[in-house]
Image 1: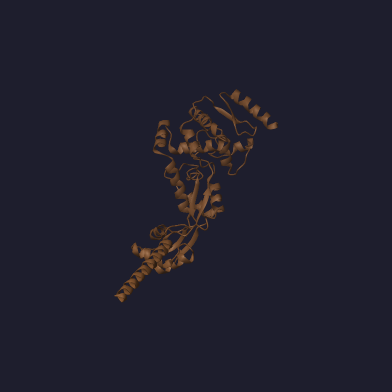
Image 2: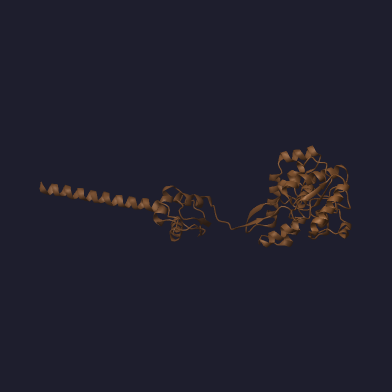
Length: 345
């Protein structure tokens, strides 16, 4: 009888030890299943080679300190039926990711692609855009320009005298490109961005004004280069509309600078003689195309100009970037006199 009791006690103790051990193991496995504490804010670049098994992948992740235990990760992936779906590639993982998050990224093949961010300001012309893109290491200037010369945007037109059909249609914005991007992909993305911005409602407004999209883009580029103060965009656009309606030459300095093919801040009387369809002092109406890439605000200013009877404007010359506006030539001449006095101060 005593032997039986001792045997039962021994079995009970063994069961207790097994249960305790199982509890310890369960606790340990639960701990291993938890995310690794976020030891660093910076992500970790991990390369999973082609043909790597789930065992090999788990070891790589454990070596990088992204998971607690390679065996637990491997069995967890197998338990979820994902161990054969993990894809090779370069991945950016961060500390603190759960196993599910890591597995999801590996299954999707959400690999890391190094990118370059480039900002194209409003008012940049094609050549300035090409220089900025080259400076960011995304494309060779000459290669980009050669492709641009051969590109005709979906929204644009090809008119006699146009320097580049694509001028004005590369929308100014901040872009993120893969480091392996091609010049064509850059052009396509920037052209597509304008099509996103130029909504159906805006196109309908063009028709209301009796203007082609190309005319609006051409005017918007002039407004972009002329208006230094945001509050004056609609006024300057209104002046341009008024002069066109009265068949007066636009006489815009920014277009002359574009005609000269070089950037300068002051237009001289000699410059006004340049024989170019972009010289809006010499040739009436609109130039053949945009002289730069206008932003949305400049486009909207052309579509919804200020209702005004102004026909003239001149920079105040006081460093404010603002203009004096006039209704008659006499007012304009008086404004020019004030502007000259401001420059002497």
